Length: 200
Image (cartoon, rainbow, N blue to C red; front, side, top):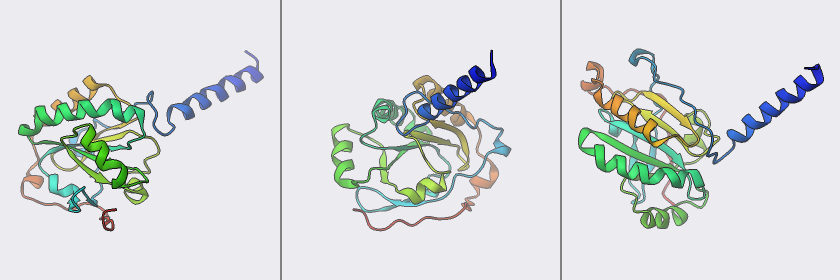
């Protein structure tokens, strides 16, 4: 293959990768974790308001496995995942599992509340912004999902649409893990706390 053809091929691969990682991508799934428990990084702390105006902190969920999903009402792949998350919440809540959705809608609760009601979302939804996105490395594609272990550490990351069975396997793996003594003693030290203004 000539050097010109090689350059064209590389450019096409780079372009395809950029398309796959674009906002609201249905085709990209990146699993950036499943490291050993000791190698996992703490999930950044935040404090965001829910639909009732109450502040919710990630550390409120310490001791539980959390599926933290960045999404938006206009995102097609996000809509595909929501019924799975509803099912996971029903199936595993009794085993100390929670789904938490962070909406990245620019229109705020005006867009989000009707959507949550229409789709009968049974898990807590919070309103996010660029600040919380940056805490999580700059969320550039929706959906982006972090699965957090009982100690508040990121175990799995998916950018784009992941498979339902993949999620199930990861959730079950974390539910079967034992919580470390540090977390059981109630130590909640995590990085930078973000306080977000009043609900819109």
